[in-house]
Length: 124
Image (cartoon, rainbow, N blue to C red; front, side, top):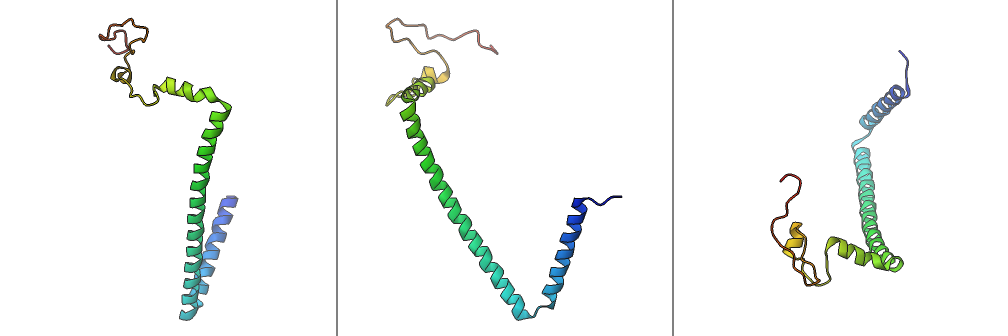
């Protein structure tokens, strides 16, 4: 049976853990308390830096979102209108119930279309 890198790494990790446990058992109570306090301080510093990084990331992404939307509007001014028409969002107007349900809205040319049931859909 050959020894690969995974076996070697496992052996070294186990040896390091055993050595650490041996050294910890040889420490006095004062040294154990000091080690515990050092580890707690390092953990708190790591936690604080992680929280700061999270706050900075949120600010960065919020800034990127607003700047990206503004740049999008500057470079492609008609795209906003296209998406509003595509998704049926008119400025200040509510979407008609017929359009929300998937039925075709009445045309604005004056001629009315029948608002009866629509046939020919899949599953009917």
